[in-house]
Image 1 (cartoon, helix red, strand yellow):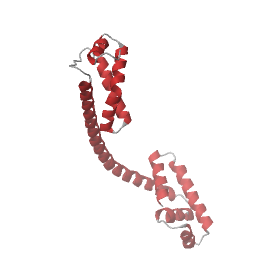
Image 2: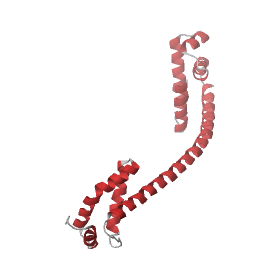
Image 3: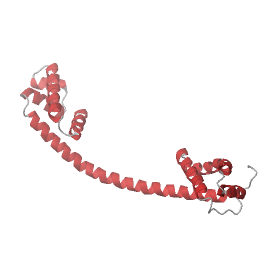
Image 4: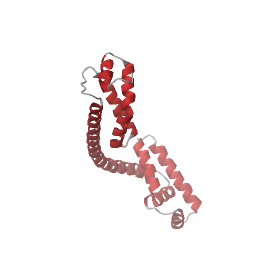
Length: 194
């Protein structure tokens, strides 16, 4: 069957001959893949395009017209699909950039509101805590002071300061666990930033 010309293969393929299609596939797959890959530099995308072209050939075998060889038809199809892919990627990139910009504007507003709400919840909860527990938390998390600085300022041992900070964080976690994930995430972020 390898001795058949492209026109002969096409004639057999029109009759539903899968072996003729296999010979055609074996004859052109490597060249077509190399051409598409050289344009895209992405193996998976190149394989997808080449596969689509061969599917297109099989599905439209009754309407394909060849003067002599499949090669011009295949490479024109490949060129068109590569151009189409580039256009889709460009549109996608433009839409993604626009979406990212819109989301970042929303995120800034949402983050500000969430942080404000969270700070309000934290302040409300801190008011319920014993004085030294509250002071240790505020000096550590809100003013960024070290354990030794807080211990010196409040005339407490460093271990006591650590215990009070741990206790304040434990109480806040308990009170905030019923709130949304965003609040908990912000607590962690605020804690890590300090």
